[in-house]
Length: 342
Ligand code: ADP
Ligand code: DP6
Ligand code: CO
Image (cartoon, rainbow, N blue to C red; front, side, top):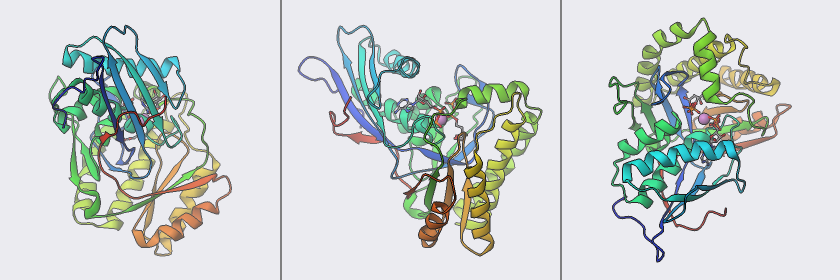
C-alpha cells in the first residue's frame, strides 16, 4: 500500500479511500496542544462497519486552489479544515498541487456520529496514497490525529486505543489496535434523534470546557483507571465490565461538559429517554449498554444475540427518527478511484 504515486495521463495524482466512524467507549475530551492536536487523555473506541465516509482525492499539477465538495456541496468552513489537512500531506510529499476532493458520508454530518473521524481518516489515507507517501498505519494515524483527534482511531478497525503520548512533537500520540473486530463481534444500534448539525462543534466544545469547567482536572486524573478497566474488559471479553466502565466514561464526559460556561448540553429529550430504556433492558438481563458523543444520538452496544430486541426497544422511544444497525468494521482502505460523486 501507498507505494507509488497514482499519476494519470495528465500527471494528476489520484486515489480514493473509505473509512468508518468510531465510537469512543472511553472518551477523548480536551487538548493539551491545540496546534498538534494532542489530547489531555488517552481513549478507547470501536470502529463501526456500516456507516462510512468515501473520499476521492486528485492532486492536479498547475491547480492553485483546492476544490472541495462534502456531500455534494462546497462549504467554506469545511473546505478550510480539509485544506489544512491536505497541507500536512503536501508538506510531507514536497508537492504544491491544488487538490480536487469529493467526499460523502452515508450518515448525518457533524451530528455526533463521528464524521470528523471517518472523514479525516479517509482523507489522509487517500491523500497519502495519491501522493505516493509510503506511510505506515501508525504514521497515517498521527497525521489523521492532527486533522481531528478521533480520526487517529478510524485508521484502524475493531477495538482501538489512542495513546496520550509523552513526546513533545506528538509522534507517540497514536492509535493502535487492541483487538480485531471478529475477535469479539459486538453490535451497535444507533438511535438517530436529530439529523441537524450540532450547535457547538467538538473542537470548540473542548476548548470551552478546558477554559471554564471546574471538573477538568478530575477528568484528567481519573482517566488512566478507566482505560485500564476497559482494556482488561475487552481482552477478557467481559461484557458487563465493559458496560459499566463505558457508561461511566460517557456520563463523566458529559458531566464535565455540562459544567462548562455556558454549559454544553448535547442531549435532547429522546437521548435521555433512550438511556433509561437501555438501562431498563440491562436490568432485565439484556446484554446492552449506551454511549453518547458530542451530539444527541444514542449508541447502544450489545452482544449479537440482543440486537433485534435492542433495536425494537429504541424504535419505540418517542423522538427516535431512525435506528441504524452496525457491526464492528475494519480500518481505512482503498476503494476504486472515481466512485465518489462530487
Ligand atoms: P462529528 O460528531 O460528526 O465528528 P465534529 O464537530 O467533530 O462532528 O466534526 C464535524 C466536522 O468534520 C465537519 O464540520 C467537517 O469539517 C468535518 N467533516 C465531516 N465529514 C467530513 C468528511 N467526509 N471529510 C472531511 N471532513 C469532514
Ligand atoms: C465526544 O475528534 O471530533 O466524540 O479533535 O477537535 O476534531 P477534534 O474533536 P473530535 O472529538 C470527539 C469527541 C467525542 C469523544 C471521542 O470520540 O473520543
Ligand atoms: Co468529531
